[in-house]
Picture 1 (cartoon, rainbow, N blue to C red):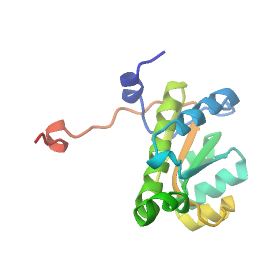
Picture 2: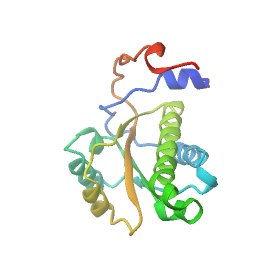
Picture 3: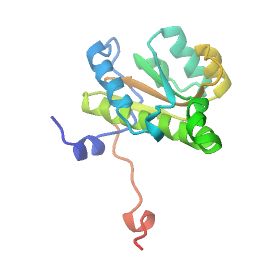
Length: 173
């Protein structure tokens, strides 16, 4: 079992997946449990997660995201949606405008780390046509797509991308 720091260091954006290697139901369940264990404003969990394994729907998501082929190549795509009205009930305008987006984002980040811990890879996709994603999934009113995560077993592991130095992003006061 990897520790947390190793899990974070081994997270890469995977754009090539092993063909015909499905994501096991028990691993997917564990990943979704970790996403739902993420902190959320007021513990409201103002988000909804769609598990997309249907080929046609993954191709529709691919199209909605500028034809990024890895989305349909991965056996699963997780779609994280914010549910602003749920957060607004307790936190009003700020909950609707910000907290629901944060909730969905944090859940997606936890899922991405759980994917690595489960021996798989993913890529976070934020550049997509919201309306096209909503139409493809026939989203009910009140859900806003925030992030797509392709999920599967990597066919390759990309090199680690460079990061800014701590002194460029951290200020101690």
